[in-house]
Image (cartoon, rainbow, N blue to C red; front, side, top):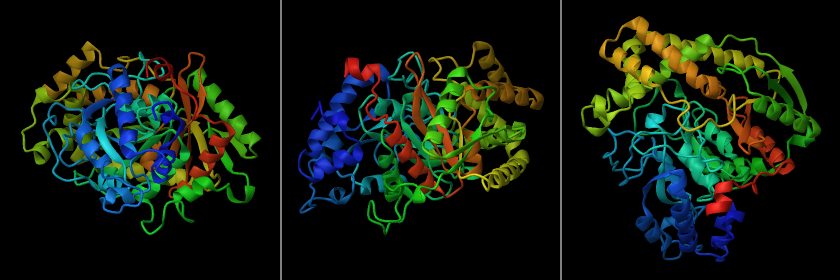
Length: 504
């Protein structure tokens, strides 16, 4: 199985199990072998649960006769990894990439994990994330940097960086991911993978504190469109529909675009929250526009002409309130008092900004979210889909965006002496640094629109350059149909990073 494993996506592996061409234990053993070979280089898996997964694999059979319910799911027996952030797995520690949470062991599965188990996926480990998902790169102090299989000197993005690195390295065909500001799409773009962020508010809620603004959603990072479509059915679709039945997201991904009617696509040339788009990204977008035109769609370049300053500030204010919940109020989750030494200084500073300004300024931030949502709703009355950048540049190098020593000293100072003017200055400077590279995805978390990164380009250095598409809210099926069309026109499934070819 080892040599054939990479030729299948998750649906393909499940079909092998159903036909009894391979056993769940063989699949799991292959995934574990690949993890043991690749993980020392990429540092994507931060918790192993091999023994429990082996026991579950022994109790999976296609007919389910005499076996547990795991066998009944559409992805029964497929090895799977869960992100170590937000999605609680009963009995497994959930660190959220933080020293404070490193001993926290949830006693019950989160609703999203319940649905993952019901699908038959066999969880055998957890993937790395930045502390509390705060950064668009995955370099938690607790575990060290996660690395990109396409080039180990570069980031796989964040916050689902471990998930993307594991999929790109061929450990699993898809892995759980979540997205509160681009955390599915950013790492998918960095690692040459498909990353789909569903519409807002159509998933089971977590038992953890509910963040304001409803920015976050769960799904997966995958190598195929159909795997993400099926996962959307399993996590957010109509539970009464069988996998692939008419009306399901999987059926939508398999269907041609309605009657061959061309889509009207707005090619957004603005950098959104970012400063400017690199030549590599501009080339990838221009190439995507040409591909769409060749497929018969109508592509219209437009400039939004919007000042995103207020929207950026609103996003950060919401983000800081979330940090406050999980840092300064961490004892409501773990029972342990939060201490400065148990959190990274940028996270600690962001939490204090949330405490300083949140109660006063959160209502205005949520009002700005409604305003920009209405603005994009009006724009989408003219278009079916938007085309824009996923990132302002290809994957940056490990450590490139980490705070400098001077910045860390400023962060310590403002938490010790919370002077309002200094806190605002620090927030602006930190935001500018992150948004300069990863400022193209957050807007769609604010508006709630479905959005996806599609791996259509690689630059001259062999680094992936994903492009982003968005549709009207709750038009996820249309976006998946377009993704499937692009996948057929320019297949990416067989593209493999040098790490995978050389080491695994």
